[in-house]
Length: 426
Image (tube, rainbow, N blue to C red; front, side):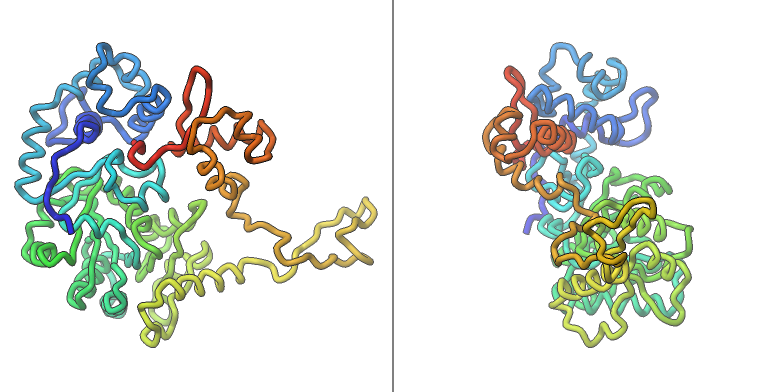
């Protein structure tokens, strides 16, 4: 169990210089945004470079241009070495460690689920192994009623008895209630904070839980960051991505961070399962989230074995999918054309099981694992096309998408492609 701070890699130092905040704002020297950093990463990958290589450049013009900022600002960011040293010393003194997207111990869930939306820098206090995540993200409004508060506390304790982590945002109301409920039941908790990491981590309750390896606090914002609506909204996706499923205890309708976070997750291409508290007393926001694909949390959850959480999640997903999927395929037939083979005497011809592909899966999703397996060594487009027995144009589209997601690196002279290994993720 690692709770101690480790020396920063050269890549991490460079990422902090370019994208990290060390205190008050400095005119003309704002760190790179996520979009700008990702643009720089694309340039680095194209040129077979790593972040630390930027420090060795004689001229950073091309790197700055790739990030979409002027050269002077880029040089100012790289020149913040002294400020970085003081900041890291203070953070380490308070038990705060840093992991960057280039580090091997960066959360796998964020890399795989968020891809380029994964924050370049994470600050944390507590056992790093808890970044493996899993369990349930329990979220809800700050001003929750008594029934919702009791529900959040009891479900969190139920999760803890099954060794399922509880993930939450640490905000007043449902978040804190759920986290406290899990800790009191002896469970583990990951608090994904949008502000005040340092202040929160030194509170007595947090320190005791951290010392017992029960609590991990992480944030994509610097340890002294103040609350803003923007950082709170940006934190929502990090909560859901860290868990196996989300549970909305109480949500307003089309208002507040709880609704925004759940809606964002449900509208993702491959969303995490999202449960909602159901029944008498649950707010209208919970009901309306079901219209977006959320699933009612089991009514008799107390009778279920929390050790079988994954089966509960799978069963709920199956019920939700069954509600959305027509029992029989609907065949649309033009009245101007004669009946096709799909119809018999004007009625839809039954289809065989397995004839259809889930709409959430694209051809790229289906072939990605095989594509990456094939690219253990550098290959040309023609070679990949031959191995996959697919058309060259289609293979090129897949490769382009894989490169844009930093799953594959494009090599030059001659043009070839090779999959990234974990340590190459920037």
